[in-house]
Image 1 (tube, rainbow, N blue to C red):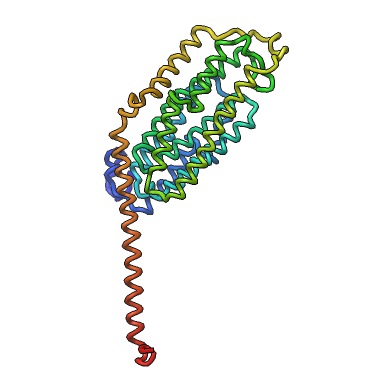
Image 2 (image 1 turned 90 degrees about the horizontal axis):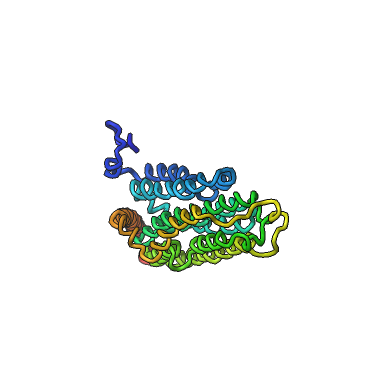
Length: 354
């Protein structure tokens, strides 16, 4: 992209944003960047590295990976694909929405099958990133703003969940849900922290996850760029993920804290309750989660002007593509009419009159 058009290559973002790339070149670059950033986000089927990475990492690395590094992929899709390549984005947007729905449903169903606590939360993160893709694919300021808010929100929620995974492992020395059970009697404060963070992840009203997902849904459904049947089908399928999320998260809490107490686990581990240091760390993450949920403008106002400019640029690209298609159809129709007129003139008079 920096070498496009000849002359001295310039990697300055403001210069790249002013360049007028051809549609073919934009499609080529968009596809390459989508694959690259799709690995980072991650997008199914480029997601397979994430559960393994979470399975081997320590708690601080989990928090950085879920809270910051994954969101770089979503931010890059907005910053490079949607902003620098608007004509290509207009053509790839339906694909982004379909991939987002696949992310939501596939990762949620896969999370059900996980018996490892880290991998279960990792697939939950993949599922939540599907809402980011839907928001980026929408051509509305509300939906795109919801995608940004979802990245901020899940960064806080994902970090809190993985911190609790590490704290639980320090006490139980196991990540297998089959080996846990009934520890809620020994760790009541830890159970309360797990419950609040799980409710935030399943988008409980009053928390940041609810606001961001609602903005994505509302922005996409009210986006008249896409046809009504497409919006209804995609929104209905994405809503399945909203239903699946509380099922696998609440069942996870049941397997860890409720049920029959594992005597082997209780006798051979020191199940101490949450310490003040751990309560303080989770509180620092819950305060912005609840604050954004009650007053989302704390975050959305910081980037609203940039989002509106981005959406306006993409809508302009969509209008140019539509006008080109309409002009092409008119040209084809006019050529057909000319050919018909010439054919009528060259036919014999008897055939022409008949």
